[in-house]
Amino acid sequence: MSNTTERSGMLVGLPGDGLGGPGNGTLDRLLRGAGVFGRQREATIFVVTAALLLYFGLTNSSTFGSRTNAIDLLSEIAAPIIIIAIGEVLLLICGEIDLSVGFIFASAPFVMFYLNEYFGVPAALAIILSLVFGVFCGWINGFLTVTLGLPSFITTLGTGFLLTGFALYTSHAEPKTIPPATAGFGDWIGTNPWSQFIWAVILVAIFHVVLTRTSWGLHTIATGDNQLGAREAGIRVGRIKYGNFMITGFLGALVGLQTAFYQVTIDPLAGGYTPMFYAVTAAVIGGTAMLGGSGTILGAFLGAIALSTLIDGFDIVGITANLLPIIFGGAILIAMIANVQLARLRARGRT
Image (cartoon, rainbow, N blue to C red; front, side):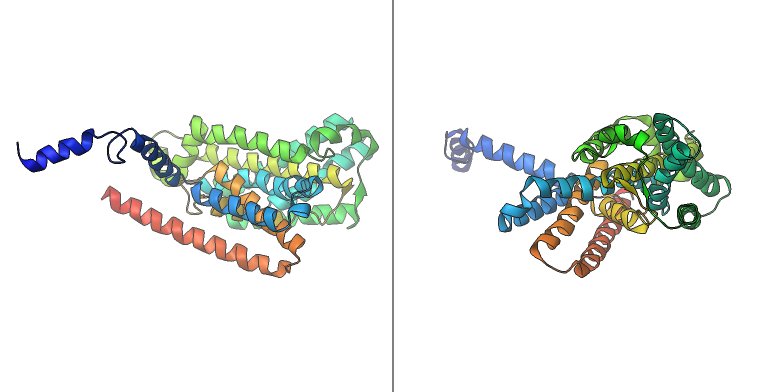
């Protein structure tokens, strides 16, 4: 045996010397754990979100860390973005988008109001039917996109205008008060300070499982990754897209009801493009590819928290909100560049 081999064997066998003994096991586990974490699609946005929360928490602990601000941050600002982002993630993964969801947000509470106040529909049924209205709007978007073959961008742009016209015309552009008969359901939907965020967390958990552990999620990803291949594999691509449009419509209607109950008023100017754009931004910076084929519900959740922290933190610090569109736009472009580069790397790996 050579001297080199003997020395190598001795080094491996020395305990606690930092090279091969037990003391190196903890470091190895930490490095492996860091490697596994770094490979997760949500890793980057998790670090960014944690850093933002830490920064504003340390610099403005008395205000940012207060219970009142926590409610504003998580329930009033983040929850609507999170819930709408769930639907947008599903659509983006299968290669579509919904620009009308913010207008479903605005219209659904008016459906509840008209049914209960003008047609005498019981409160619980009026709420359910307003959610069904959101599902129906999603079905219309699916029909125009999947069956008639219109691009989803054009389809949902048009239905968005129709819905905002419905809300403005029927309400005479005036806010309405929540019907007294429906007020008792408010705590379950949006009146309770934490109810919106609780709904958001529950829905994130449900749809994370749907996307990662069910055939619906697998087929959604397959549809966006290779639509022709998915069809040849027997996946009903049209059914998947219809379903995701309807899920997004339902979630938009739910957010509209939550906001109406939380604010105790139904505003025809609520919703619009802003919550939709924030939701898409949260999805993209959270790791969902706008080109389709990949995405993450947890990433969208963290993206929404990051955006909400910026909105809330800038307000507390006194920085003008006019900077936010610049930051959000830059974040989208960086995320898209990263997605495109990763797609190219994956394509090279297949060849």
